[in-house]
Image (cartoon, rainbow, N blue to C red; front, side, top):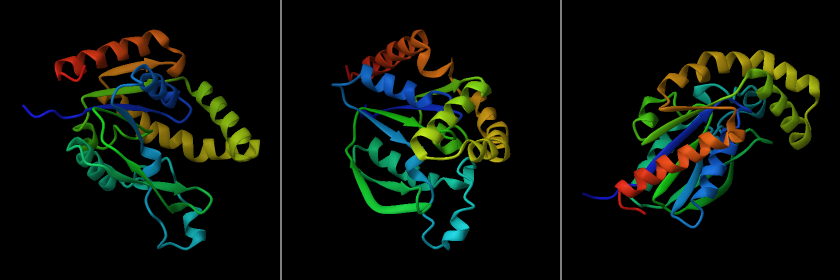
Length: 211
């Protein structure tokens, strides 16, 4: 039987700690054949829209993502073909001219807020994880990140959370939890759950004779 890479999906709301979980799993397999593929890189190209229209982009809505391209790239990686991953520039609200060459690996960790929302993506995953963190922790983490790293004001972060992030989470992200094989509470600080995930992934890799 032909070998196929293992695809691990890690979903969860903004500030849930899914990136920390992804990095912890990645670091556990460092030295092995593993790559991370972030859904954030696959926001739609909006060069055809005027800048004023791009400013209205709702980055927490499923329509913001170019899942067709993401799925095409995953299929290529599954066939052990390299891809050219797009790079999104938030300052101009569209893709930049930069691309990142990604070489195929035996393990693909796919991370993003809405990777479980699209059935086509779910069908490509060997394991689906949802990082489940209380809303108060998620908003505090988002505030810290947006103010310190992105230079946003407190009021703008709160306004965006109330009017966009929270309703989008409740409408689109939270419901995808039902598709998860495993739910990890409290994100990257749940070391017991992460250790269990690493052990499970090792078992899958052994079954596929990758280890």
